Length: 359
Image 1 (cartoon, rainbow, N blue to C red):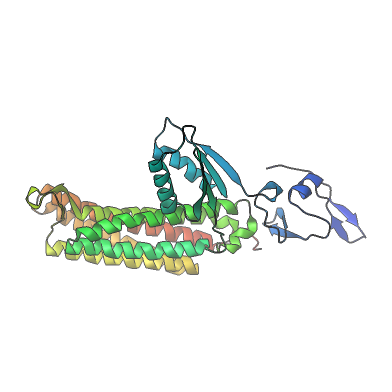
Image 2 (cartoon, helix red, strand yellow; image 1 turned 90 degrees about the vertical axis):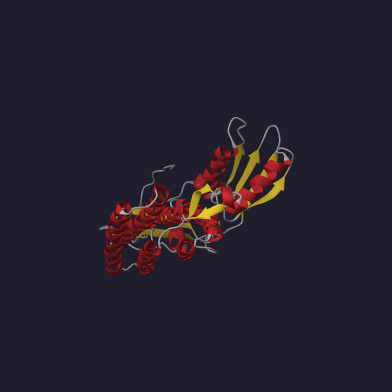
């Protein structure tokens, strides 16, 4: 952060003024007659922002980055560097490969960008370059919109994962596993938005989080939701046996457990879904009492899982079935635990700090 010291001056007997560094004025494209917005941030800070200026970076140009693909590292390692550039808010990213991109590499990059980075599209190509550009405006798809979409997707995934266990539906379980990618896309978009809030105070209100102070809370919340989706994926994976039956020509086999055990898993799963919905409702309404209710319900679910775990361990069944069943129950308990984390963060965000002033 660059700093300049200026002296507050009194003019006309009742007006205080502060001069602006000429270099900053030019960089932001301000001119005589333009308006600036003054924000009171807490008790000790003032923030000065241009009004109506779509400033994306110094000089008003789009933020652009270049990524030289490392030949010594694999695709996933290089793609992590691309994700890092996406998260810090670059609008244009140019991928460069000294040896050039072959057809298969181009196809995979395009597929992964579409699958994992919301708003990012391939806009140009050459023998050694692939140009990406972000077309998504945060106001068009706010953080609150993304959280709502994540919530709906998580509930649908949980319902289908439980149904896959109940019916022994391998195809449905595989579909749930694939849908986890959607949650990851929303997660990365939200992290990108939260990082942008750090340098744009007004953006906090535009994307629906109120104040920049809530950025950390939402960062924890969306990470918890992403972890919840991972555990739902785990439930779906354990609805399928690892072994392939030779008698069925190597086809994947569903987990086979007793009807009573299926009933217990379904009851706990339904309770977990209700806890998650109550938790997210409390977040959307910033309701502390409902958050506390969600924590109490989540703890009840965790206790219920512990009771069923003891029953599973004491029953006479093969080790493979026990491992899969215990893993499913463990994931349900962990989902409930993540709900308590979200609810606790919600309560924290409901309380204003001693020096906080809304703007």
